[in-house]
Amino acid sequence: MTEKRKFPLPLGRVQPTNAAPKPVLRPQRPLQDAARDRARAQSPSGLGLDSEHVRARMVERLRRDGLADARVIAALQAVPRHAFVDSALVQQAYEDTSLPIGLGQTISKPSVVARMLELMLAVQPPLARARVLEIGTGCGYQAAVIAQFARSVVSIERLKPLHDKARANLAPLALSNLRLVYGDGRIGHAPNAPYDGIVSAAGGADLPSAWLDQLAPGGRLVAPMADARGAGQVLVVVDRLADGTLRRSIHEAVRFVPLESGLA
Ligand code: SAH
Image (tube, rainbow, N blue to C red; front, top):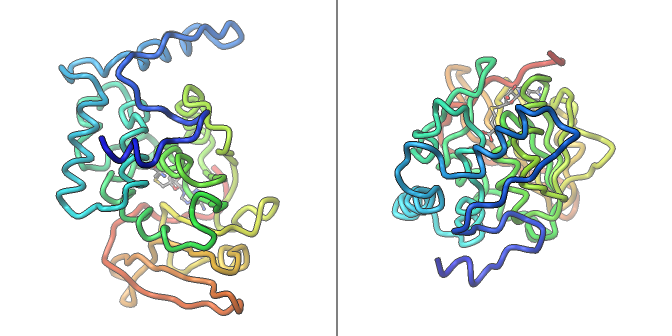
């Protein structure tokens, strides 16, 4: 893909490759983890084609539907989405659909991830130098995509089993600029604040004030929120201008899982 040549991914991040990565033995981890890693290092079984090729077709469909930014395209091409879903769902991993990841939660549709990231491209400083906070790690897929081109990503999840699952899913990618936090994302994550970008994968009745407090000047927040009638959700974008004031805009209707309070 020409985009890969124009925007080479920095060393240490996911490098798309045709060759299946060699299995890594980790004696300190349980045997079943090592076996699962080995299975994931191979092409998803039953797809009939290697995963990079299937992923390229997914990205091509997104391009046909209007995805234009080369950085977003390269990041979606780089992250093996099949490694973030249960083995029974691997064959659907490159369809533009959300899929269950356990505990009533879902992995976002690739087109939705692409849309959120395109909206994030307006942050200042440019994304390559931006510090991003993600609310709702889930299985870790979107965090891995953002980590392909942001300077750093902190991602928070309130459900411990999903936080642990994301950690396991992300370990083989060894993304040194991504930090996972187990906590209530409604209060953001003050230790690393402020953030140039804040993106939420869960929507509530309002935007928690901590998110706005933790948004740096020039920064942008993208989140689903209940619409005016409270019947559905819309995508809300909040920009913190250089003078510190906030500017809010409402975008298309969306359907994300609810933003919940507290830990579980
Ligand atoms: N980012 C994921 C999407 C996961 S779905 C992806 O890549 O596909 C949204 C996630 O938000 C769920 O895992 C849910 O548990 C989590 N969530 C909901 N409310 C939250 C809160 N207050 N703090 C942190 N995570 C929350």
